[in-house]
Structures are given as structure tokens and as C-alpha cells.
Image 1 (cartoon, rainbow, N blue to C red):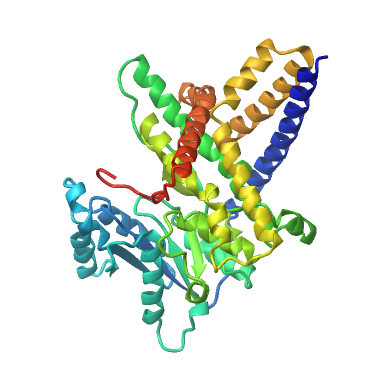
Image 2: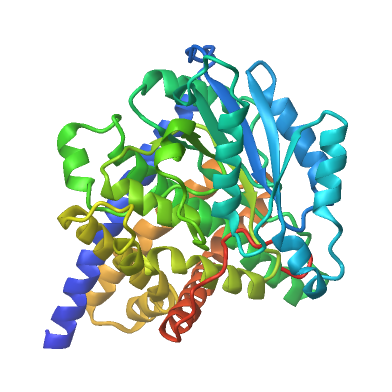
Length: 442
């Protein structure tokens, strides 16, 4: 065996071992989510109040349905729906002439008693600033005698579609983890676009649909296991061993105790506020408790849009060196290890652009040891994908679900291409744009 073959075999063996750990995390996530099917009523969280906060930008058309959905979500709880618009919309209106007036839509809904409308006045503010503004305003809405430690901000996007029992799940988690301040509902992803006519249109649709499968595989294999490892649901040894692994929550499906936001607000002017905030929480050793329930989120409808979204989101882990400099992050070796972990995730993200093709090439053209290890790597990844499709894939005809699985390597390549584009932008000195830029012309 040549030296190159030995090195390649060793690298593939290490990669297969890592993917086996990811598969173990996927199975663990599946068991965790099945807890959400427990028919028992949730444990009470005495006196807890919820503010369902929805930061909005160029989303006038979706607000009426969103408010109706969140009002239904609030049923049975002491909860208030809060829409937070921003002066940024008016400042950017010339660049988005097709966008309807979200401020007017929110004002009309509030006038009808459907929600509370807040308007963030600084046109330079981003989503984090809207959320901080809402937190301050919600604290002022608390009835006399109700401390902010008993109130929670449940943050969603206007296009979020959480199950109607989501606040029940949060209430149970709050009661079961009284020392925690941050709770998180991950998402199941789907594509909501119909394929265009013709073979090429069907291929594009399959790749976009597989983009949802790729995201679901990440939720099961990476996002949920990392959060579980930081929570009280893991043993003390596992929590200690995993304390340096970068884990993140997302800005939709995020439930934060109001008293925490008063002393530790979201990072101002941060385009990736959720990943930035997750780093701050992790540096302080604070748990981020997942709930066994999933929001429903949409992936972009075109391959180009998925590449651009990945390029924006890539700044989340890739900006770890900047997070280290944030005064809110607690300095020390855990934060440094976490930054290295985040940068490792960024490198792995960009690697998705070449790994599928490389593994296929090694399976077909490598030396016998290389073929075997590359084949093991591919099989373990395939099992992850099949489980993710089986557990979180959108219902549909078997041929559509098989097409999603078959197109997964292409979707992984699309995701990696976005990562490479993100690296290029980062090296040019770009600061990134928000994860949740939506709406006409966004």
C-alpha cells in the first residue's frame, strides 16, 4: 500500500468514525422527539407569562395569517402576541418598491385587538435590536407584582408554523428545568414550491427538496444532540466533555426568560444574532434546553437562493473570532475551544462542496482499502439521510421521497458551495447580512 493510500484510508476511517457519532446523535434525537408525543398534559409552570414576539420586515402579506396562528398558539396560556416592526423598512423602501407597508398592516391588526404592535425607531437596527426593544417594552407591560423572572419571550418569525401545543411544551420544559433561562424548539424543514415543468424543472425541484432533507439531517445529527449535551438531560461528565463544542439555538422557536434578557440582551447590530447569542451563552456555561417539538420552516425555492442563504448563514460559525472579542462573552479556555469548534464547523461546511464527489470517486477508483473505508463512510451517511427522511421528511408519494434521498449529495454540494461563497465574502471583509432577510426583493 502506498503512503498516499495509507493516509487516505486513515482520513476516511476518522471521517467514518465521526459520521458514526453523528448517526448515534441522530438516533438519540429521534428518541428525544418521540417524547413530544407523550399524551400527558404538560407540567404547570406557575405564574409564567409568555410574550410571543414576531420581528417583522417587509412581511405585510403574511402578518394576518401569522397573527391568527400565534393567537391560536397562545390559547390556554397567559400570553400576548407582539409584532415588532422597524424603521428600517421605510428607510429601505426605495430598494423594495413592491413591498407592502408592514407597519400599516401591524397597526391595523393591533387596532382590532389582535396583537400588540411595537415599532423599533432606529433604521440601522437589525433583528436583534428589534428583539431587545421588545424585551424592554414587554417588561414594562408586566402587571404589578409579576417579576420578569416569571415572563418569557417566545420568538418566532412571521412564516413560522409551530404546533399549537408549543407553549405547552415550553411550559413543561420550564417546570422541569427551573434553573434554565433559555429553551429552544428546533425546526423541521420542507420545500413548499411545486416543480416547474420539464425534466430540468423536476431535477431542480428535487435538489431544492433535498435541501430540506439536508437541513433535517443537520437538526437530528448535530443541532439537537449538541443542545442535549449542554442541558441537564446529559450526565455531568458528558456536559463537561461537550462544553467546548459550539452549539446554537435559532432565532425562531427560541424562548428566553425576560430577566435574562434584561441583564444579557441579544448582541446589538449583529446580523447573526442567534448564533452570536449562542456563543455568549456557551461561553458562560449556560444550558440551552431543547423541547421535544418542532417548528416547521421553509427552505428557499431555487438552487441559487439556497446557495445565497447558505453564504449568509455561513457567517454564523465563521465569525467566532469576533464573538470572542464581545465583552458579553466570558473569556477563558472554554470560549477559545468553542471558537475553534465553530471554525471547524465552518471548514466542514465548506468541505461539503467537494466531499460527496470525492467519496464517490474513491469508492469507484480507489485502492481496495480506500474503497472499503470510503464505502463505510458513504453507508453511514446514507443511513443518517434515510432516518432523517423517514422521521422528518414531508409526506408525499414514495417517488418524491426517493428523489429527495437520491438528490441529497447534490443538495450537500449546493450547501457547501454557499459555504465557499461565504468564506470568500468573509475574506473580503464583509460583515454578513441577517439570517432572516425575507420579503419582496430581500
